[in-house]
Length: 354
Image (tube, rainbow, N blue to C red):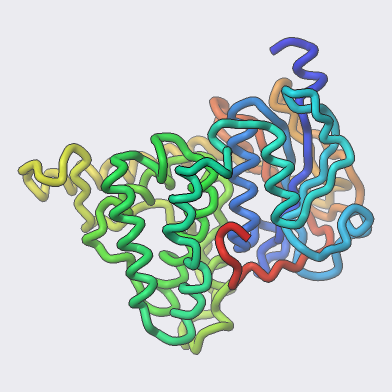
């Protein structure tokens, strides 16, 4: 990478909602994870550098209030640099949906093109997924939810691709995967709902998503997701705050995925063993790839330079910072959790593209 590129690569901050459980880790807001994934893909493609700051759901910090007073999340704040077309990001602030779309479209990343016919068709398949899932939690009727799952399964079967419109993550996957994870995790615990085991193409899609670093490095834990919905249902089980901190990143062992052909005759037990071993290996790899750095009683948010590998404390008013480094072969983005102020975003009933 040339010196000129190092000096001009765009840098921005992504402020997202923190977990309601510990007020520091990644929160359950699917819209925040959606744009976190988009930013991650930009960094993977060396089009931008960014840092993520989580803020608890109370009293936003002054530094954020001065930039954005809408109360919406996520918030993107341009720091420095320009896109490949020379458009400066410095000083730009985006918090409304249309502003966020405009900001990320500036980078003209082919994978993140939002208005192509393929993207629009794919988005329309699950346009009402959030509303449907929230209605299911309050009514127990899973008919429409299963219809959406079936439509997604059929689309993936027809496309014969790893993801919604290709073999790489694109914008539509950034919208769908966080919401699908909510359905799987919260639906199972709160309503005993499981994505039908017969929908093998949808399960393949989830497995592929779990293997994508842009997803598993941005995904909140299961208790955080459950806490997002727990008060909406008459749930008599354990409170999310008392649940073991785990993150679902595997598919069930009893789901047999024939990766060659649905019609190919194979030994069921043999295929199951292969698939389960593959999942276990992926979990081991995830454990090896991720390390944590804790800064107790720190004095600022953290900035990570993916060219030098340096982690720097760059702003004030942080009481604790936890940085999760990613694998050396991925962009050196970081998760920054800090005890800075607040956010509000009523994402529970929004449409995926809102």
